[in-house]
Image (cartoon, rainbow, N blue to C red; front, side, top):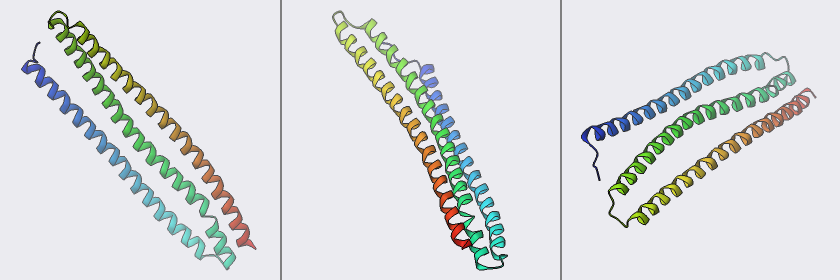
Length: 188
């Protein structure tokens, strides 16, 4: 059996550090996107709050004040939903990049392990074919299990996205109906 050369060892270490620094960079990019989203959301909320307060306090009577307040619920709910979607998009994008990097790393390790087993099989004593075959079978079974888990995870993400969209639409509809009822009551 051949041991890795110092160059191979150094190349493996460099690849590991490159992967680590790449993932760290992606994590920072995601954090920056979230911070920018939060700053923009805060600016918008402050400006709209000021605008809404001026509109509400300029009402001539209590009905006008309450009607102005009732009209704010639907836009606020839609903005909250849009914010949640944006956060979800940023987080899922970052997670997808991590998953892609992990998959690439797994595939590289798989190839390395298979090469090691093949090399060991070439240098194995006579009569060890069954043991080598058992090891290869175990590696293939583990690879199949990982593929199944990856497929299930992708299906779960798709299911969650579908449910998030459906919940968002239902929430928007419910808020619109509640706002309409509140506006009718304020007008009475």
